[in-house]
Amino acid sequence: MTLTDIIFSLLTMCGGAALFLYGMHVMSGGLEKVAGDSMQRLIENLTSNIIKGVLVGAAVTALIQSSGATTVMVVGFVNAGMMTLRQASGIIMGANIGTTATAQILSLSGISGDTWYIRLFKPSTLANFLLLAGIILIMFLGKKNKKRAYVGEIILGLGAIFIGMSIMTDSISAMKDLPVMQTIFTGISNPILGIIAGTLITALLQSSSASVGLLQAFTVTGLVTWSNALPMIMGANIGTCAVTIISGAGANKEARRASILNLIYKITGVVLCFVVMYGLDIFLHFSFWNTTLTTSGVANIHTVFNILSTIVLLPFCELFIKVSCLIIPDGEKDSKSKKKDQATTILDERLVITFPAMAVKQALNEVVTMAETALKGYDMTMRVVENNEIDLIDEVKSIEKDIDKQESNISQYVTKIVAQHLTTSEKHTATTILHVVTDLERVGDHVLNICYCIRDMHEAGSAISPEGLDELHIMGSAVRESLELAVEGLKYSDAGRAMRIQPCEAVVDELRDTLKDRHVERLVESNCSVRGGITFLDIVNNLERISDHCSNVGISIGQLVNVDSNIDAHKYVKHLRQQNSDLFDALTSEYRNRFSLNAE
Image (tube, rainbow, N blue to C red; front, side, top):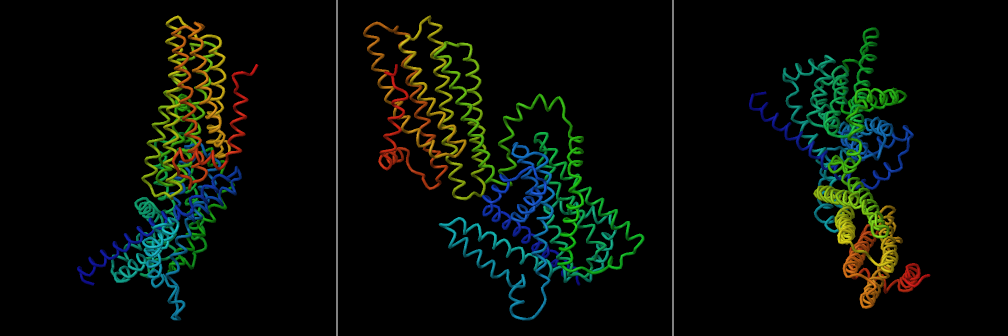
């Protein structure tokens, strides 16, 4: 070959590699979108059974075709408090088995035969059909049905992988007789150099599947043997830890331990394989050591190595956990920052990139925490109103600041999630979350406003009449019912609880009007001071506004449970009254009786 031929062959190989890597990216993204709900259910059903964790890890990784993405996702789960370190260890081990699926798919390129059906299913031929089908699904059939578009991405990505593999194979085949090729593969036959090369290439590509795929492409040269393939595969397993280590930086203690656990497991597997295989070779002189491998041979070594590593090392999982705890020990800094970590680790940005579907769920979990915080602040405020516990105002102020911080954090987090590739329902949920946190933040504002009203009245030396306090207790109880229904509706995704908010809010509106009328009567009869009366009205108005925001949250819960119910709030309430008039009237009557001003 001339120098020009070599340069063009190298450029072609790089182009094929780029297409191969892009195909993996597109296919992985499509698989993640389609399997998002399935992965979520797998994780939620996870127990402390480590065997089940291994199976889940293998299944999830086979779905998204990336062990690196799975382990980064696991670090995010541990950081978010969704998963224990022991559960994470099983998934990390299983991920190494799941990632071998890609190599097995690529081994199809080794199919030989001249019959029409064998030629049809060869990747080089099948790729054309896959690309065509993928484009049709994305551009024509997927405009109104996102699921079809995501399936199209999977098919298109797989087609691009096969085309990229074919291009790489052809360009490498043209250079197979070059002396430099002999030099490269002779060099990596040295196991230490081979492991280093595999580690560096995989760390650069951030995917063991990609590096093993490249190795499969080089089998066309006839230079890939057991002696150079095994070290490269072992190095690939270590190199895939790079992205996990990076993702663990800045995470909490348990998440850092999870990333270290992954590295310990991979290194131990490589060391064990190295000692056994090369130790036995000294005495047995393996006859297959210099046997030339095909694409399927490389895939099988990759699969067997990972399965055996998992089987052999699984009984030592607890030991690996202890070692990771020794490397990342408990310390004074961790205990002091524990409270801070608990407040900030749930919204883990690692999930935004690797698993936006789960990030949406975590944002929703944090909304529940925010709602519970608002309820706690409300209860304290009513103690200030009814028992004159002025000392609680500073604590309510602190709670209101926490609510503001939660609203800001959740809104920023959800905004980042929306920028990712989401399904229609996930986008709808994310948008609804933004509405909910705004309403909950306003609840916090009104709660604090009530405290300030009491404080100002107290400083002026005035007070609300006993009759007024009794009335505020009844109205406050009705408002608390609405707020508690909102919290429980969010926590349990319960549309039934959410539906009860509207009748309760209707009773609160009635109480507001009645309390204002009674207040005017007391003023006329001089049974209430002017300053106390002003505070009374301010509290009534703030309570009614809290109930309004609870009503909005109730509507949002209905939209979260039924993703197709994205209707205007006023239309929703009107629809609820008309379509469920008997139930609505019955619930309104129930709340009217429970929160009656005339009850003795």
